[in-house]
Image (cartoon, rainbow over all chains, first blue to last red; front, side, top):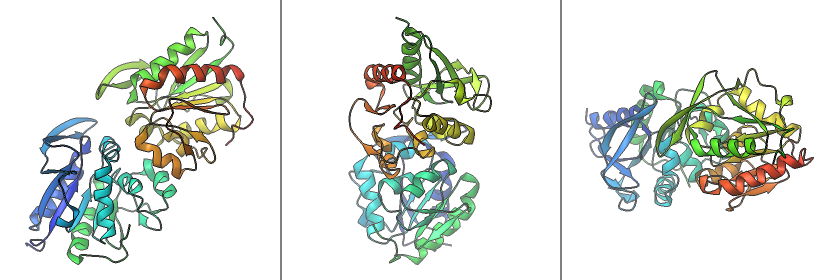
Length: 186
Length: 186
């Protein structure tokens, strides 16, 4: 079923992304016909994290300097402990994330991925979840944190761990199909 | 010079601690005559992080379940991206950190180490620094964040990166010599 064949989705990540949290949403999107681009801070490859160590590399399609948020219908932010810590250091990456919120476009973030939402200052008054180690950072950023496999709040989809990926992917697809959500703001 | 020979200092850390941020303060403390214990979430060894990969192992002296804050004069919290993320998941570790603040004892934290201070809810109104990627988490927790090699605020000593270790160690020793600081509270 090519229900997302008109949709172009950006996945933003860098070294240390939790492998399944990038590949599983990417495959779910591609299966539905979406065009998916991997956006990162630099050209080349980014190294995954799997089972407590560095894993395989995947190709970067475009850098945060080259990518234009206007070209995409939705954004996905995988987790991993190292990935968002590196990503939030890149002002272009943070502004890229923020621009999706400003335009009301669906954003899905899992595990430590929501740390990018803290950095982009877009969590005030939003309902979310995340990996539990960064719960306090989410609450301090103004979010209401829920211990659920997936939390959906007007275009914003969040989950806790790789074990939540099925629920995460399903809600992500649903929100992307719905398109722009007015309540999603920066 | 054994100026710290009466002092017992806890260093709390787990896997993924930035190697120099544990070994350098530890050696500085031992050179001054202090007794130093490595406290961690489990028995055995903890693996360092160095040059973007897992490094050497060091012995744990006591677990957070066994250690009593009352036995120590001061606390040191090294950084590393993975270390504080694992450490803050352990409620006993968080309570151990908080107890030093409750008793006004000197606490020194470097790089990502201050994430433990967010988790322990002790940053409201305090002046600190940290690695810059977690600056926003520090500010959201109520701290005033300064871009200086070392920030000292009534018993609380913080630094940004391994490059700041000389200044960090010097202030750490100074605050431990001074002893209890009334303004250091939980």
